[in-house]
Image (cartoon, rainbow, N blue to C red; front, side, top):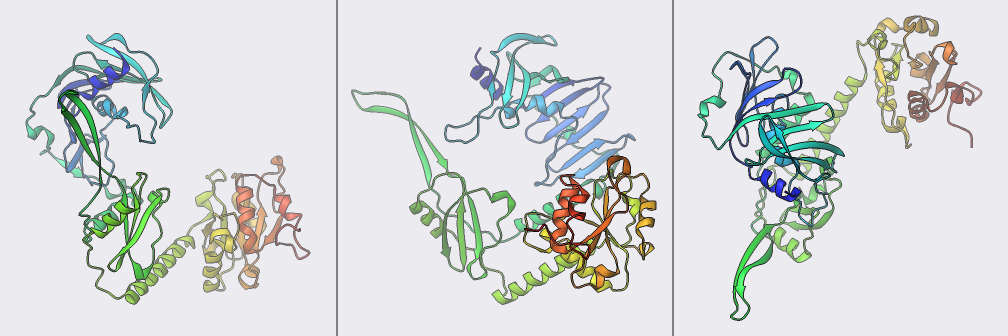
Length: 481
């Protein structure tokens, strides 16, 4: 068989229920029941349930033997435990059909299929190259059923045995009624939880309704007679894919989300109080774009004036900046928290506590992009604000660091807080055996601190490159000329 034939055989398993056994490295072994898309049940070979998933819930056995429950979010990436079952039962997803107009390279076989046997079943083995990730996998596709019998990548592998397709499973096997404990909230990363909450809120918003879209019609003759004009056509209508952006015209265009920044803008026009923009990679004529936007049934704008909305945005932005600054201040942190970081952070320690407001202003300025100036650098400082370091001397600092691999530290002392230039102290804290001079120091103005932090953090420049280029007052204000 050829690769397209083997691939087509694999496609034949899409959407079909399956029961099988899965084996992997070590003592990995499972009995699996699966009904696409999201119904899964895993048992060990002794019949003990290890994993259950349905449309709304997921259960897995924890190390202490208790079944842990978590609710599924439509916006959360969920994966079956261990990856083995889905890697075999959904193997067809690894080589999706790619149309000629797509920009994606197709997944292709790099070896000709040849007959092998896996756990007593005949199959076609082929090595697959996926250009999207550069990986090479070896699959064996069952010669009769089309299901993947095995997968290998380097030393990793999974194999399937005793597959049965198209069984009607009792829905109750994909539920769990035994004892559970709920998944701890902290198990979900805070950024992911925040994104899920945002998407749920967006889903509840009134949305524009597009009532007209162009269709690309393709005709493929199937049979007919050129003599009589009789013709059978296979006709395909494919809807265009695009991104539609919407904003109140008077408020102006909002910032582009990172996920669509690289998607080209195709067309923009007003409809009522709204501005609409079409983005996408599919070619759409200006006439079609105009008709799409004109067809939109627009939602009602927010029940507030434009000035009220602007005030709310400004207040939210100010609250966000205050919250970020509070986090940056480093209140309560200690140097001890970072002694085992192997030099992985750049520290700014507050050693003067005479003016809290001035300290906040300093942190806000020094942690801004470019250290407060328009440069190509972005400063990355971790602040420590703890009164145990009030009046901290350089000698005491070196004693606190000891043998820890911290090669430099920034200090905000009394002069930093009171001097209009806010010159921050930079201290060499690296070991002598690596060419450092522990205790050597100089000062730097805010507009240059990003350059110093960036270069010292990656050892692109030495401490002396800066300390030997200070002005007469010991402050580095940039390289001359």
